Image 1 (cartoon, rainbow, N blue to C red):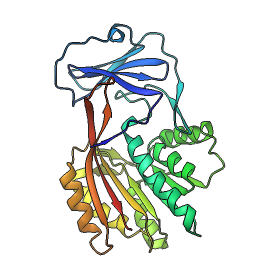
Image 2 (cartoon, rainbow, N blue to C red; image 1 turned 180 degrees about the vertical axis):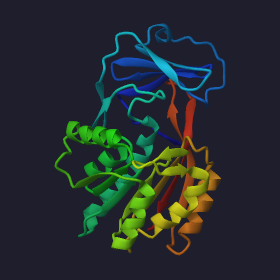
Image 3 (tube, one colour; image 1 turned 30 degrees about the vertical axis):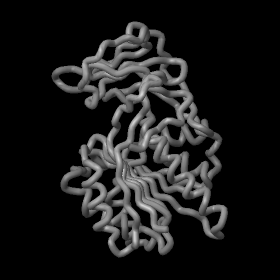
Length: 290
């Protein structure tokens, strides 16, 4: 398992009965987590004093209950600054477990920049609020950031400003990722790194439907066509999709079988409360080419 243990401003304090108690900077939240099926005793005192508690409804969705939580606040990860805000479906604007992947591809980019005389181009698809985009920019890459939600793209731009990266080479695009990739193939554009964090179900800005079980394999084949002649990496994440590490490995190996790719897929997770427990947070498939 790849564990995101480099955080200072975030930690999982305790987990029990379908929920996790988290510290986000100076504030604590309680959020549901489908992986937490154990019913161990809740011993941490902040279970009763959390600043925010997301209560899931039996009819679907849910709502927040707040106690002294500001509308927005910030946390940092290494040199990056993220603007947080609780919104529907329990999210805050950051998936902390992804930091272990940010560190991985950032090191690849930095290493390449020390020896190569070419700019490193990265494509971030389903890019959300830009954690991966900011990490790649900070490492010295130019990034094309694509997401179907205008609100998420604006949030990512704000995170770039807060992180002091507003002047870095980045394109912020509100677009359907499938259609964008098809156009990039026709244009002949190529990328040295491609990051994919697809949802299980979604809609594009013009109502385009995305269903993971129907779309992911042909989409991966299209993305492979966008790799440069000297690619560095690909990253495919699976959380809401529930695709296991073996599935990610097989798909990536198949679509990249002509590229001499090295594919490794593992669970990713977060350490919990200074104990040996690790909270599973889905899987990631990593591809390197050298």
